[in-house]
Image 1 (spheres, helix red, strand yellow):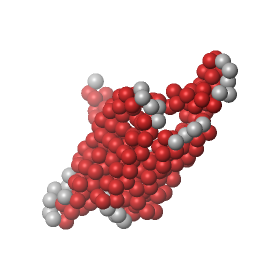
Image 2 (cartoon, helix red, strand yellow; image 1 turned 135 degrees about the vertical axis):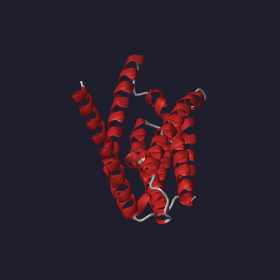
Image 3 (cartoon, helix red, strand yellow; image 1 turned 45 degrees about the horizontal axis):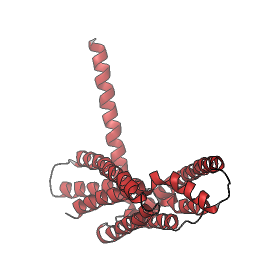
Image 4 (tube, one colour; image 1 turned 180 degrees about the vertical axis):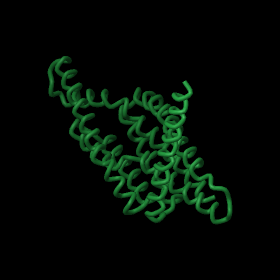
Length: 243
């Protein structure tokens, strides 16, 4: 039961994560232009547009760079402190990023808002949580003499992760665009609360499993993918021989 709760909470967190991210992401180009215009550093609309495009391009590149650094860092944190503490850090960092964004008064603060996103890898943490939770359930079934359906259960659970993110990514832009009609910062403010809810859910419902459980789950998941690829290759070879 506990493992099922963790999986459901992980899905809820991923939906909130996707909604929060997509609330403000599509609005950022307009936010950049608005901040540049308010600072009155340019005298013509052409200069403002060129500066906005260049600034947004640099902001996007900076964000991608920070994310690239953060991805292996999340792997280290999962190994050292487990999924629960890493999940709390990830969603707290997201809330901090949105808070800085919601209070930005210049484009410089937009760049500052991207620094906490070095830990903004909720999907990776969610995958580790689901993998370790389903591995624990599989181990319990084996000990009680049940059938070993852990690989299939894990594959289904991980597949639903993508569905959860898609739901959030569908709701987020529509809601963010609606909120932006009145205030360009409204989406970021709402995203703060979405991330805080995920922090609370992680504290209350996720477990601190030992590192071996996470590593074992990931190893078994890789083995399942490798076995599937081998079966697919064998079926292709058989088809070729038949022809």
